[in-house]
Picture (cartoon, helix red, strand yellow):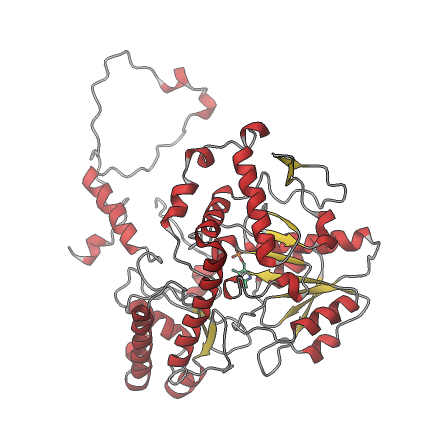
Length: 488
Ligand SMILES: *Cc1c(COP(=O)(O)O)cnc(C)c1O
């Protein structure tokens, strides 16, 4: 088939009168729409639905499904996103009628199962993080960060400590951190990284005063490096009267190994969709569960799930609550998947997943650092950051070129141009379930791209050639995205 016909939209395939179904002749008197539905609800204009045959529809959707790149198809080293292999048993449990068919307003005596799951999941997440209780309401990591900042707010308000307006955020932080602090009404102050790629304790000390509300930290940080000075940082911030917020999106590196609660953090958000396996490509669905220590428990969003005797219930009686964070109880299907993952993996399995994530990342890092510049050459956790700066200086090949070339080789691109402290950053996070062979294949491809950069950079600039869309105008795509077909 010509590429042109293959890439036609279903609307462009439409031919007047073509049908994909046949219904029996009408054998009752016909009625006008306005006899059945109030006129104000009736359509004014014709709909622009495509008229196609059954074969056209089937081919259209089959083709679309094949254009979709996913972890079920190949290697997906997208840094900072933890694209896990998602065990298929998760889909079975999340789809069980007892969960999928629940209504949020059902009486509590009929929802004991999901409440027990939420209670038990919260307990297990407390164990993993070293915290005392939490909320499953937030719908994403960023939403969890927002909730975390509300804990800060509620805590200082209760103490009448209204001058604490400043939240520290390291320069390596995920962009959502400063955004969440800012949208919650705090002034964001950047803390510098040192030459080791970690929070500079010297710089941190400059910001410890009576205006300090606290700090938001990711550990391991977005360079994939474990903050060695975390105990000292926690002590300094607490001594200055501030709180510590842990961005737990990187928990995949440390499960069963180290706990934010033990590091001194007061509040933690987890990305259940990342660390605890829910497919979330394209931005959802998510769950940004937030766990807190005893100090912050009084401010939990209401309701929170509790247990009385053998009965589970939603406790609305939280006098100092920050209020609701979501309309109902959170993203239930993601919670069921996370719970299934935890139960099937078990304590040792979770620990093993982290060990393998770290092993895979270090293996790749060691095999690639000879060909690509590694700005922070240390043992990493679950991810690491290379730079294309030297390649760019030598041959004009930048991070985007490498990312686009990977698509040509049938591999998903890394995260590029983040974190901001590395020029031409390329951030790789290999999934812990990848085999040695699949990692070796990736390494081979990366070496081939490095060879091309030296010998034939123009070939790289022209890639990808085999994807449905080649290179998009990124500014236009971000500012004026055209996401669907519209009639002329
Ligand atoms: C993914 C991520 C977030 C944000 O999580 P979302 O669910 O995408 O809102 C925050 N911090 C870090 C380090 C992340 O990797």
